[in-house]
Length: 212
Image (cartoon, rainbow, N blue to C red; front, side, top):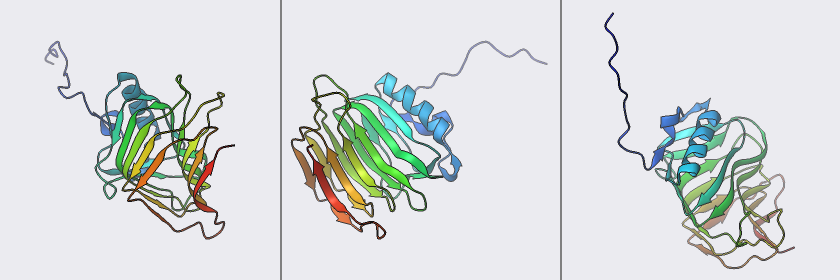
């Protein structure tokens, strides 16, 4: 047998970071949680752009992404990049925490067939106490979920959720489509967003702001 030559392959492209590099299949059947969590951990630590390419990414439990500071998370469009649960999840499908200045765009969440607590949960634990970001061109279809998109009041006192822009988004079928929960909720802008289709079993609100 010939001796293998010394050396290694080095990836020339390093940004954006593609989920499939970490083993995600995106076939709608495979549980991609472990691969996506490894991708999320690496990308958030590197400060680079999250790029889930076209595919249907199945999750058996919450995908948790932390320390998103001035970062982008963009897919290939709401008809091409989808995240969905593969089982009932007693929590959010995707949780973002410790976020500031983020830009989320061009993907879909569809929880049809399973229960989740939230489609996307955005929590804040920062100093200074604020959270700023943009959510553009996403579709969040969450039947039988308590909340589609939730901005959560942090466990740390005096945190606030402010200055978020939601543009060209669809929020549909959750008990509450969007919940903004903060002791000091400031400016939120919804531009060209569509709210539709309450959960027929337990209707509640399209948009609810809780300053308590």
